[in-house]
Image (tube, rainbow, N blue to C red; front, side, top):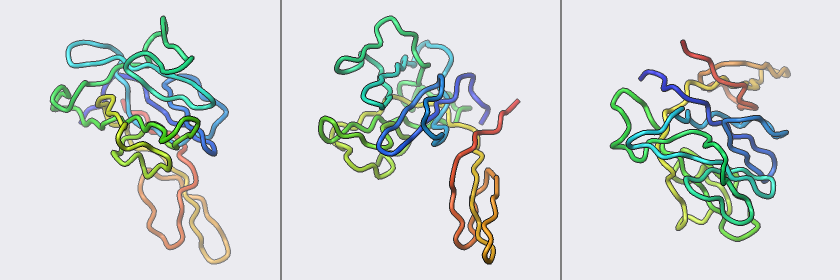
Length: 178
């Protein structure tokens, strides 16, 4: 499917905090590209805003809860409102907001493309929300540590590594498409 015009939606994670944005990176490690937010609105699209609170930043299609506000802020981007509004030529993923089970808890991740919120602890499944559907990101470039004898080799690839003992240590970014 062709790449959609938009901005990458990036998730940064540290300890028990997640920060999701198309903007400037916080001082958190890069976790991955979730999707691509569309550059413009229109029929079958909804605006998405960022809400920051207590070291976390999540997304909403309305006002931010609590003391944080998005009044007067430009949207991060736009999402398709449902699977039926996604053009056939676009590969899209759902974006879920993973709400905390209790006040003060911080599920990590707080925004996911997976309905189980990637197994996040402390998520209230009854309040999980699908914000909308976004064009899927291009492949993510990952760094893997691969043991060979007594040596750990670093492999940078967009492909999964199935070598015994291999583990992904960081997502480095994503290849740009023309």
